[in-house]
View: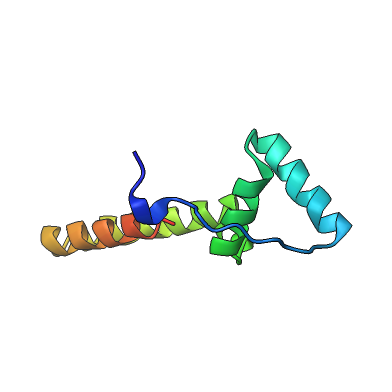
Length: 91
């Protein structure tokens, strides 16, 4: 069950270009979700290109390497780095 603060209760009318509306509808269709969900995601994460798969893979590889190297010197610090890197995966 959702937290009360996570429930969407405010309705707004938004004007957009025809091409943007088509883009949102197409993405929703491909992902099997409602266009409203796509619009909410885009508002919450306006720089969605930052989280494209290639960047996420590169980040994960870098984090894994940092943790691997840190373990040689401090297991505690390596665990801390790993935990902090995992937090960045949460949107």
